[in-house]
Amino acid sequence: MKWRGSLPVKFELMNTKTSVEKFPYKTYLNTLHGPLEVMDVQKLADACTDKWYNQTLCKVNDSVVRMAVVQGEYHWHEHKDIDEFFFVLDGHFLIDLDDRVIELAPRQGLVVPKGVRHRTRATERTVILMIERADIDEHVGRHHQIGGLERLPGVAADQSITIVEGKGVVKSVPLGPKS
Figure 1 (cartoon, rainbow, N blue to C red):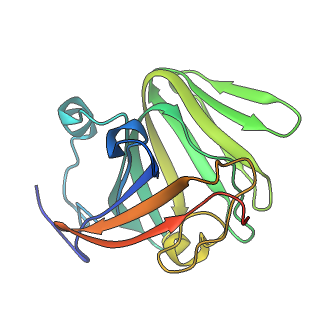
Figure 2: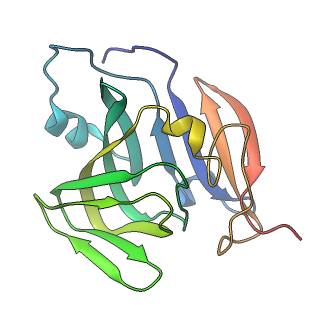
């Protein structure tokens, strides 16, 4: 596996009274492939043993393409300035909105426009591609930006996100509502 750009960063959402494995959000921000490099997304997905894994594959202009293997649910959130595109490769992907649930099957995609509160989930192992603005990691402060977390409505007070670079914990920040 090639490492380009920054070191891998892992986000883990966890209940502070529970083991890390219960809420395994793992997000790797390093870019795996440059221009003209063949990507074997199936091989990467097959090698994944995590329940919630997100890896940046490549950069295209001002966007990044990410592959995720998901099972379970992410927390409710919104991106005030950034649209998010989801495309299902394998499995079934649910996007909960305030007023409805959208189900995506393989080879279906959807754009969640900026400012729309949503929660993504999958009841079975699902592989998706996402396209987001490359600087999304600087704009996701509404739910998981390094060093810029807000408390989230609908998230238990004892849940936090742990950001890991390499082998060392960088920061653990509570996500639940302020007491």
